[in-house]
Length: 195
Image (cartoon, rainbow, N blue to C red; front, side, top):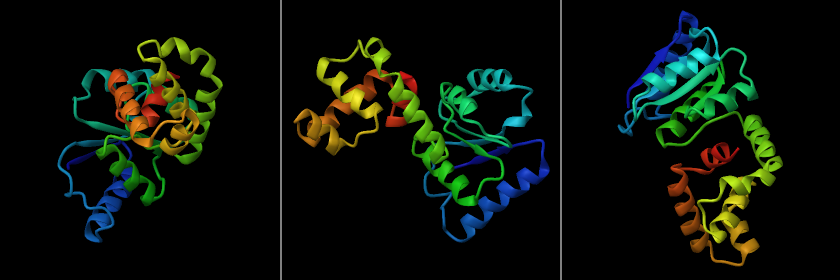
């Protein structure tokens, strides 16, 4: 896996590089274990504003590249805007090495990484908008709609199965079909899309 770092700030580049070198040396995260995707770690402040960053992402992002945006003042609102454009992670430029490595690992596995408090906020926002959710779920069958609503609320497969009185394997089949219809690969992306 190749990881490219972009920042005008040399201290950020040095900090990120040291984390990647140290983790490789000590096997806390094997950068060579998976060769599927390139990871781009980008300093938010390279761009004048969020619009130019989004424009750059939508125009130049290769199909397989995973983008992690790091910001000196991360905010939930900016995270929401960026997630709509397919970024794979968002956090602080100087966040702890475990967070950076976790973001890289999640991006490489086609998942999204955010601070836990941002995820909690996102779930609350999504939960508050369930009334308008029905319109967005028109492409699903009735049972898939039931499952999707519970997924968006943060229910586990086991809890969904219990609520709908179906087996866990049936829940997994429904979730797989929902992901396919919305062209997403995991729950957070579905929640963001349905927001």
